Amino acid sequence: METVNPATGEVVDSYEEASASDIDDALARAEDTFAEWREVPLREREELIAAAGDVLRDNEREYAELMTEEMGKPISQAHSEIQKCQWLCDHYAQHASEYLEPETHPSPPGTTVETVYDPMGPVLAVMPWNFPFWQAMRFAVPYLVAGNVGLLKHASNVPGCALAIEEVFDEAGLPEGAFQTLLAGSDKIDDVLADDRVRAATLTGSGPAGRAVASTAGENLKKTVLELGGSDPFVVLDDADIDAAAETGAWARNQNGGQSCIAAKRFIVHENVYDEFLDRFVEECEALTVGDPTEEDTDLGPQAQAELMDDLQEQVEASVDAGANVVTGGEPLDRDGPFYPPTVLTDVPEGCPADSEELFGPVASVYSVGDEEAAIAKANDTEFGLGASIWTEDRERGQHVARRIDAGCTYVNQLTKSDPRVPFGGVKNSGYGRELSEPGIKEFVNRKTVWIE
Ligand code: NDP
Image (cartoon, rainbow, N blue to C red; front, top):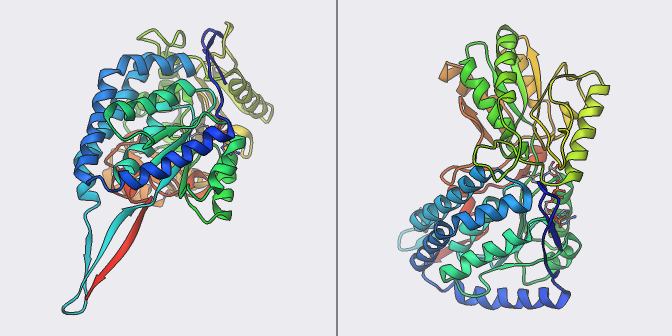
């Protein structure tokens, strides 16, 4: 496995891919460690997860630089990602016991009936490159503290990050084998999933990858959590604070180079404020700096891989051929490397790629709608259902619109974001199950009934 710095085109490092026997050894280690780890009292597991947060704090710069090198994330955003992972560790270190408190049920006199939350065993995680630390820690921290052990199959372009995450848990003092990285290609995943020692799987990534993993897991009767793509609506109603909506909207679309499942992608704007919003939004997009991701003030670095930018450009060209209008951007920058500018499309025809597919880069589609009903209908006119953002000065109206949007997470006057305290996940083709907060830690536990006469 070779990693290439997308900003410079230079080979960063090469890694030996795991053989079938390496994978078998890892599964054996996971099974053995699970027997030990599940017996460690929850309070002690919380302390070890808190220690993982300290390791992240101590190595923040090194890990941030690694992300920037492997997938081109601007360095300031890479630091924020590591800090968010620290927060995640702190959150579960403080709340896991409360989340996993046994629940007592009404029962006949003289009996006690409760639900307890036992770990399930080794959980396989297939993770993407866009937030290399956050996506992997988001599964690892709650599942480990609940007493499971983790096996990470990370995206092939971020093996350095994958190994660094293993190091975080090792240095924190978790037993060897509690969290292991498998440097394996996706062709090895079916066999791992079919193995009896693996009890469940979680995947964050594209729809095709999600279907492949869920189908093999289904054949083997294993539970899955899927966090897939999105085409999130960003609804601007006629009473919105336009400056705030334009400023936040530009960031919601373009942060991380637009490579985020919960990025705002379809901007659905009430016709009364359409012109004003569009002008302000384009201004905000054009003010973002695209360039060297190691510079502190860079907003957008390169796209993570040249092929992914080529796919994005094809989607833009097909949309323009279908009738979409490019207001700004619209083609790669004239420089070496996969640098793509913030792009705004209007008059986007129904069914073209910019309307119906996920655009995993800094390209926004802006629509004008006649009223609130039309805005809700357009927001829901998608195969996806991950996040949504609604802008209005009337909080009650915002709540009402939020309730009518088919998405896993809705935000009023705020961009869609993940937060350790709040459940996160999608509906429709954006996946199922929830990560983070209490529902997240309870996805991979055995909710065991204990009846005592
Ligand atoms: P993929 O979904 O292909 O990759 C994500 C992870 O899944 C990687 O670890 C990948 O491994 C693995 N994977 C891929 N196919 C399979 C399979 N058949 N069985 C098991 N594991 C598999 O994303 P890409 O990087 O190719 O990006 C393509 C598109 O996916 C993006 O343009 C975007 O639309 C979407 N995406 C969504 C993300 C999200 O956060 N929801 C994140 C990343 C991408 P390997 O790297 O070895 O192929």
